[in-house]
Length: 187
Length: 218
Image (cartoon, rainbow over all chains, first blue to last red; front, side):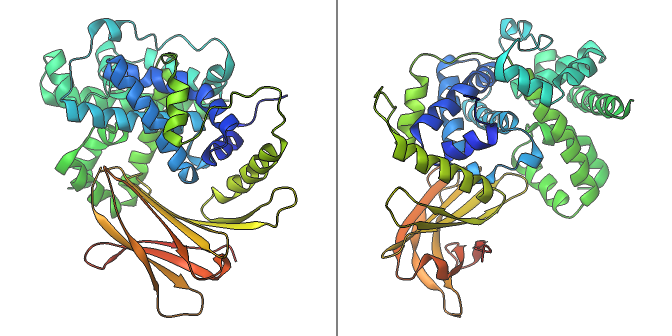
């Protein structure tokens, strides 16, 4: 039997159907927990955040708009918001250097729904664009995007002026956006 | 805040790392500046896509059961027993909800041998994702109205709910509810058919209408 589409599965999940809810959780839990773990480090807090992300998705399923992105991305945006809130409450801990060093953003997911999500969202283009950035801009952008770090925190972590941290994030983001726009218009 | 100042902050806004007063000032500017809104929206597309670069890590055992428990749903453990009726219901409802997810809608749910139950939904949501308010009305004798409000700011404010009956100038006072860490739900029976409800509004403690959901499916 073919797997349900993301939209259909989300709809069944929203209705609280046990089979659909279990299938929905299994489909997204790896990415949701993976992002939460990357952002907050602490496995217990990451699990709490991931659980709350699913409950929030269940409560707010009708707000999902497929025109604004995939269900994968929507789940991750919810997770990011919760993780950032949790970090602000706990006063952000420094990013574990080992976690950041092991952040293998270059390697695509090998198979399954994760690989499909990456293909549909143009993540390969994103990786190429990130590869083209100067290392310090890429580092600042990844710390902000995947670790939820503010410009102030990045300036402290990297021992650079706040203005420099802000510039690195902004310039890196603008270059990635421009590179992705160029690739879209290439024949 | 000027457009130049907003532009300097746009990437951090898109990444969700701006908070407090700075965020409030920026959102105030965005509310009146379509050009800056478009800039932040474009950058948010990149920021959101970057989330797919995070590693895929399976959570500890028992994670699925904990989420299901939080939903009040018991894991399905029975094997070999047909659950056809529930699956039929879920299938019909899923299709209906897909239709409803665009903004507002009506659906009919029916099990075998049961008469249909009307479900009508209406949604009001902030484009920036700061809040969502949803109204669901279903059934008759009694008709149930469920209003849920989710605010990302974690506030604990109290609200009252009024239902507006088609053809009537006077709203029906339904009840009050209080948010807990940004989330709150009110569920009350209504003394009118689900199909007669025109809109639902949520008022703050000062009596000001803060959210209005209109059932525009008819």
